[in-house]
Structure formats: structure tokens, C-alpha cells
Amino acid sequence: MPEQLGQQPAAQSVNDFAELMRQFCQERDWERFNDPKSLLLALTGELGELAECFQWLPADQAAYLATQEPRAEAIRDEVADVFLYLLQLCNQCGIDLAAATNAKIAKNAAKYPVEAARESAGALAAEHSALAGQDKFAQQGTKLSAPKSSTLE
Figure 1 (cartoon, rainbow, N blue to C red):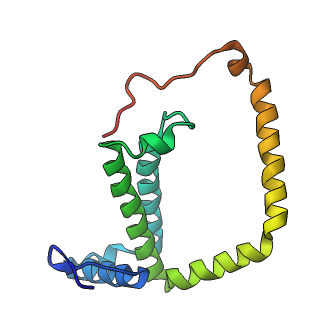
Figure 2 (figure 1 turned 45 degrees about the vertical axis):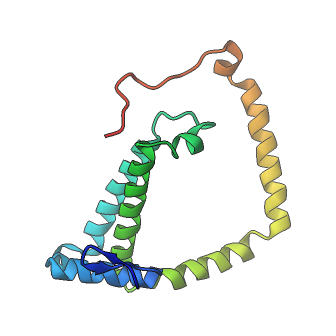
């Protein structure tokens, strides 16, 4: 971990981040507040804050708009908060996030073989296209927009 972030070395792997968070919380005596239920609730709150960054964005423009400042910085911050709370939850529950993620990818690969997944994705795309043609708002040219008060905090 060669670089420095404040007084902490920069993490390079999931396990490095997990250890940094363990140390960070221990140094501040926050471990007593980090029970799984409380961490899950905090994680849920952070997911809500991340969702707010995308709220009211047109779906077809969301990826582009997410790269534009100051929204991009807000998204980076919220993604990091989600990740850090998830790591803390894993620490408290004795979960190796890297190992659990690798195991889940392997399970998903077995559950969703490539050809079957491509066929179902093609069918889903066709269904979405057909439904878009039936959308009464799209047919009438009605465009829904965000309330005037929607802004990033």
C-alpha cells in the first residue's frame, strides 16, 4: 500500500480496504456501533443517497449525465460510502467479500449459461420494444419531467 491518504496508506485490494476500515473504526472507538443491523441500515441509507443522484434523470441520458460534475463527484462519494458500509458489514459478519463475490459469480455462471442468457436477454429486449410502442405517454408525445425542486445536495 504505497500511497498515503491522510495518515492512512492507500488500499489496493478488497482485503486492504476491509483492514483500513477495521482500523479506522477501531481508532475512533466506533466498533461498538457497528453491529450488523446498524450497518445494514446505514448501508440502506447510503444506497438511497446514491439513488438520489440518479433520481429524475432520463434513463437514456443517465450514464452520460453521471459523468458530469458536480453530479459525478457526488456519485463517486456515495458509491464509496456504499462500499465502505458493505465492507464494515462483511467485517462484522465474518464475510470475505472477495471470496463471497468469486463464489457468487461462479454460481451465476452455472445458473445462467451464456447461450441461454443471451436468448432470454434478446426476448426481453423484444418485449421492451413492443411495450414501448404501446406506451400511451409515448404515443401522445407526453413527456414526464422532474419536479422543479429536484437538485443534487
